[in-house]
Image 1: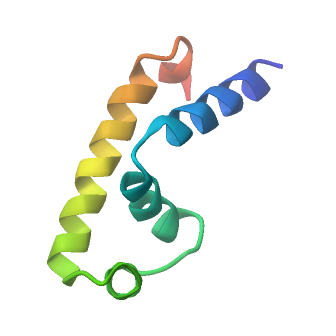
Image 2 (image 1 turned 90 degrees about the horizontal axis):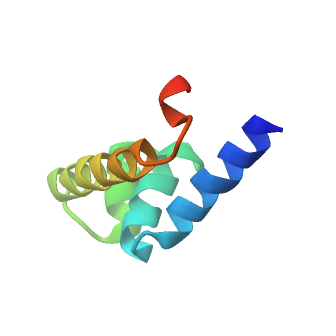
Length: 73
């Protein structure tokens, strides 16, 4: 039950992020695309896609850190 609640909160956190942030996180993590493929899909340079991914991931981690119980996972 706790995992279900945490999963719901993670999903809500992702949904609360900007669409561009969600996409740059989703493509490599859920669609299994490499950095070059992500850059191509988004119409960006590889270096730009990489930087956006790192920024979005840091933001997501910060948001998730605010959720009680997430430190355990």
